[in-house]
Image 1 (cartoon, helix red, strand yellow):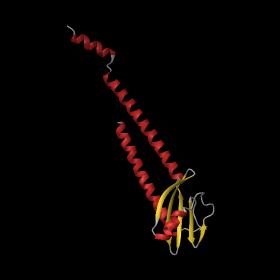
Image 2 (image 1 turned 30 degrees about the vertical axis):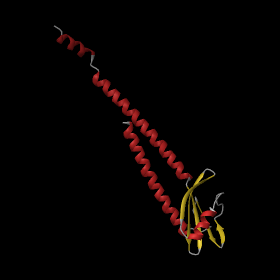
Image 3 (image 1 turned 180 degrees about the vertical axis):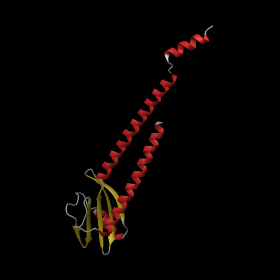
Image 4 (image 1 turned 90 degrees about the vertical axis):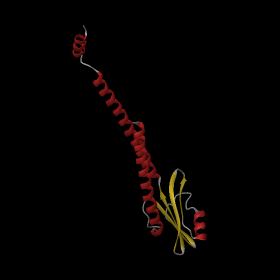
Length: 161
């Protein structure tokens, strides 16, 4: 029983995580193609380097990742990765945009909080389901094996010589 609950929970988490990760990847790629400083949505920051650097207001401390910007400027190959800075997780995508290099940071902290809550909810629901299944099984087994007192006495008297 526990194995079935564990498999269902793990499968649910895997599906959720892969779907959520794919959606984040799509949003990050779209943002890297189109966002400009001053025109971002909450949770996104963008830097455009075109000879001089233009950065979104309040870019997170520790970003932009200058090494990725330099590498993309040199080899023109996009880079995408996950970084953790000061307890916040960001997806970074750096790519060439025309004659400039754009780097977009997307905050993943809220998504990680949601995942932790989902894991907790699944664990609690699975645990409650197992406890209820065990209790129901024990109650049913007790009822099936218990005989009414009068019936047991009649059975003994009819069997005795």
